[in-house]
Amino acid sequence: MSELKKSAKQKSNSGRISRKSGISVRTIQRIEAGTIPKGYTLKTLAASLKVSEKDLLIFETIKEEIKVDETIIVKENDDSFNLGLVKIINLSTLPLAWLPVAHFLPPLLIMLFSKNRSQIVKQIISLQIFLAVIFPIIFMLIVLLKLGRESVMITMIFLILTNVYITLRNAYEIDKREVFVIGLNFSII
Image 1 (cartoon, rainbow, N blue to C red):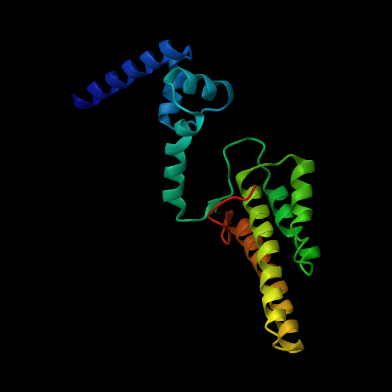
Image 2: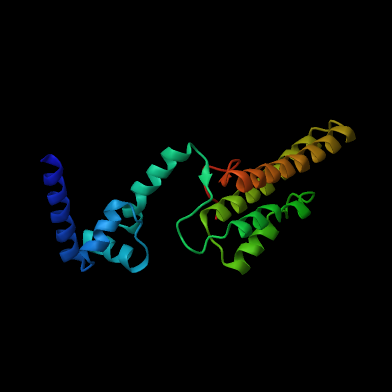
């Protein structure tokens, strides 16, 4: 009997929201069942409920963060997501791995030309920009400490190999498990 009451209450809430927003009851029920609203539906719901679009989607984000345990799931809900392109964008840092201040340019250019602005692509580029800032700072500290040529050369090789490792490790995880493992907790772009 309690299940019937819950169902009736949900239908009542769906109908109320439908009347207020002008969106069909069926669409509201789909959203309540887990479908993520997009475009017109998202904007209309946000306006009629007097909340931001981001606030409407925050529950899904929290749910995904709990599931993934600090990894970013590559599979995204929008139809424009292309796993092959994400792999290419990630691996495009390798040709310029030896030039720490420019290795983020190939993925950035590919993102701009392909117009793929998915969260995973933004994380890849943010990580590479972060490394492009940190690596020269580390290198200059070693040079300024005047530890000798050997330490400068070892540092340079270590930084290049670190970038190559991060790129290849993420490429492997994207290919096998469809997750982005080594990343930042924030986005630069």
